[in-house]
Structures are given as structure tokens and as C-alpha cells.
Length: 326
Image (cartoon, rainbow, N blue to C red):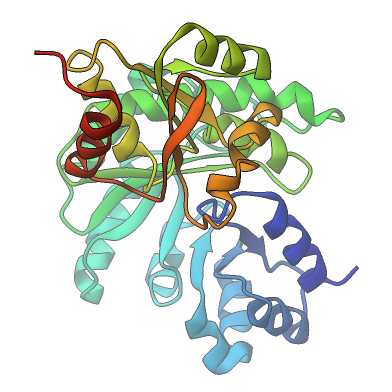
């Protein structure tokens, strides 16, 4: 299987909003061009010198992707790295952050994207900050004070294990740290990316990274779904992922729960087996964008919407189909 075919296979298996960073190490120019033509948007390199060579030989094709520094960076290579890389995924000290910030200023670059590398397995052979939240928070706060770089995520590789399932606890711990940092709402920090795993563990990664995290009650089985529809006259189910079109809808539902006590508000992960119930509804057959939001009255569909909806749009449907309680 070619690198382009492998990329397309993986791309079909994971949500569109999850980016794939392809390691260019040892690949030929033809292979890299092939995978870019197949739709790849992000390329990673471990070494600055190799990145220079690849970037140069790609010509115009190099401009069509974002370049990620995914290996340890030497301070004396930062200037060259800034001429190539869009993202630096391996910042593990304030000294390295200062060095990139200083050279970014001299190079006339503003808000260079950086991630904190976390050594989530505490492996002595790997770089990265120890997986202690107070240390990572301290580094995040220090980076937030710098003018020419912006903290935008965390990166971890996780221990190399034979069974990918054994890496799940490490990914979950990294996701928990990511969520705590994001909740701080630090200035000059945009925690939007969690970079984890490799080709043998990506399925574990995106299940952890995209797990629904809302204050709504979750529907996880078909039995739970049927029970809710049977026990409640009015039900609103939002079936989606933790993506930019879905999260605002979850937030609106959480806000409206107290205003509409006669409605059962529920969410459902679009990728679980039980979601077939929503995905296969005739009312959702032509839907393209997530979330799929369905309104039930006495177990029957009375309204359904696709993609993001505003609070005004949602309350209009709730009022029309379920009425208000004064």
C-alpha cells in the first residue's frame, strides 16, 4: 500500500476535524507529493536539516501544507527552523520557549504556534515535561507572557506498547491535563490542539480526544435511547462529536434545560454503535453536517436539523413542538 493509499484509508476512518500529521522521514519527493495530492494538509519532520532538504525539493508543493517540528529542537537550529515550520510541537521548557520567541521577533514572525511536549509515560529516554499538572500549568502560564509565540496545544507520543489498547490511560491523562489548561482561559493561549499517538494507536487517540464532555445526560446504548423516548413525552437528542459545529449546540441545550423542564435533553456520540438510531432516521437521510439534532414527541420525530443551530433557532422549534411552561 502506498503512502497516499494509507493516508486515504486512515482519513476515512477518523473524523474530519482530526488532523493527520504525516512524518516525512525517509520518504522520497515523489511519495510526499503524492500524499499531498491525495489531500494531506500537515507534514511533520524530526530534524531541521532533513526538513530543509525536503522543503527545498518539494518546490511549490511545500506551500500547500503546514509544517510541524515533531523532533527535539536544538537552539542553534531555531533560525533555520523558523523559515520552514509553522508549528513547534516539542517545547518542554521555558528556556526553549524564550529562545523561539526571541528568534521569532528577530525574524519578523508573530504568534508562532507551539505545543508543550508532555512525557506522559515518564520515560527516561524521551523528552518532554513530566506528567505533573502543576509543572505543565506553570510552563503554560510562562509561555502566555511571551509576545511572539502562542501556546496552542499539547503533544505526547505515549509509551511504545504492543497492544495499542494499553496506551488508553496515558492518552486519557493527557486529555484531562489539556482540558484543565483550556479551562484556565489564559491570555495569549488558544488550547485547540491535542497531538497524540502514531499510526498504530490513532483509533485509541481520537476516541479519547473526541469523547463527549458535556453536562448533559449521555445516551450510550439503544436501550437507553428507547427508554428515554418511552418515559418522556418531549425529547431533544443532539448526536455529534466534540467539534466546532457541535459544541455550541451542547452549550445551548445545557442552558435551556432549566427553562424547559418538560423536555428531556440528551446527547449522543455520533461514532458509537447506538447512534445508528439517529443516523438512520429518514428525517436525517439527507443530512451532511454534524450535529444531527432530533426532536421527539411521544416517541415520534416532529423536527430534525443538521449542523450548528443558534439559540433562537432551537427555542423556536422547542416552543412550536413542545410549548412553553410559564
